[in-house]
Image 1 (cartoon, rainbow, N blue to C red):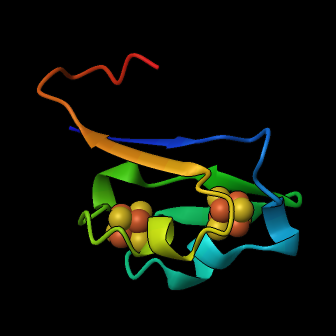
Image 2 (cartoon, rainbow, N blue to C red):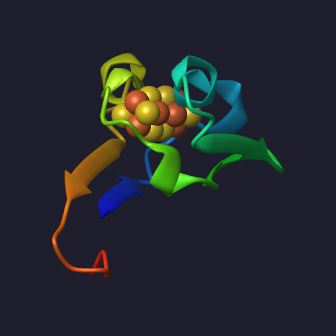
Length: 70
Ligand code: SF4
Ligand code: SF4
């Protein structure tokens, strides 16, 4: 499974929003000035969100387990 971790301590939320705008598969949603990871199963591992993030706040891993374990 694909595990997407967003570090909310350094994420700028809706004042940035670049990950939500760049993701071709609508994995993120801007909700109440924050970024929600609403559809991680849609992720195609293109890593565009990681490339545009100004703070390296996004971490994506693939795991064999059905649990992300963060
Ligand atoms: S890696 Fe690509 S598909 Fe996955 S969340 Fe990031 S931008 Fe979206
Ligand atoms: S691109 Fe990075 S800083 Fe900007 S909203 Fe997404 S996770 Fe937060």
